[in-house]
Length: 364
Ligand SMILES: NC(=O)c1ccc[n+]([C@@H]2O[C@H](COP(=O)([O-])OP(=O)(O)OC[C@H]3O[C@@H](n4cnc5c(N)ncnc54)[C@H](O)[C@@H]3O)[C@@H](O)[C@H]2O)c1
Image (cartoon, rainbow, N blue to C red):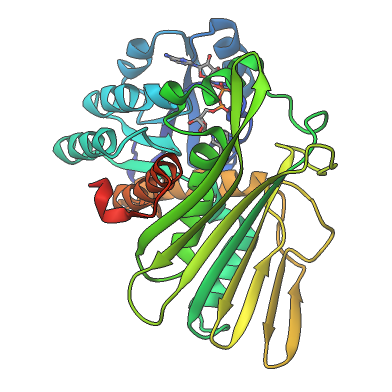
């Protein structure tokens, strides 16, 4: 990091300037001690346009060139999943800290190799999952952790996708790698998006997930393309009392989902021994309900004064990475926690493929 005593700054290199780069940049642009100094994309025109937009001095289609730049302290990787391991390893070996978009890798072996490289090189490897930083999720977590619903007993998540004629435009090339199991590492819905939901399921109950069962239907879209949904996935947490969770994916292809981003929305419900908490939106604005609602002692309380734009989760997550580097503390999302989430997501895929319940311990 460039440091002149308390004037230390984190200089970021962005790798991959596609759809999600629109939001991933927000933390680095907002943080007073961060700046985006270099940009890399295979599509050089795209890299140049982003560099201009973000005020970066280097735009390249050559990752090695970005990694050789001594002005880059940390790299944010926003590319298709089959590239994550090699690009993150190259960055760590070049002495850069790394923020890697979820899902970090396609397999636990890939993630373990990266974790080893980060340890050996003494660099920070942060796996970024933005739902954790979404203000309504933070509020709900704060309520649960403060005992507002007693002991958490059950997590229920629901993802509703709507008609694709609205919301963000997603390029065919992006859809293509997402639906290619080799490039994606699993289904576009239950692995790629699922990583968020599995992560939330782990955060809201302070016990490891032990077993998972999944029904995942593959819907044919024509021309050989297919998408993994609808789906119903359930799991059991370790220990006592017996605790379960579930996640349902519904494709309401004719339904309008109001969204500035992807045309889908996520809802979450956590039941405890003394109450219930709901998070009623995330990526979209499906329903006009308060974003967080708490029920306990016969009373319902709604929380209205929260930032509910999904983009906030990216801004806050970006700032956490910068602050962690400046303060010399681990970022909120460790590789160890990411490994648990990845194992959970992979176990769900295996359960559906093999038509049986899968123990997380089987995943290695
Ligand atoms: N947190 C979230 O909610 C969220 C949402 C969307 C995407 N993501 C993640 O972000 C990452 C990118 O997704 P996206 O939707 O932006 O994809 P995208 O296809 O829109 O963008 C990927 C970009 O990477 C570039 N690229 C491909 N190969 C490259 C290489 N070898 N070197 C440099 N650049 C290369 C492409 O040209 C493209 O611009 C994925 O890991 C994805 O899972 C996360």
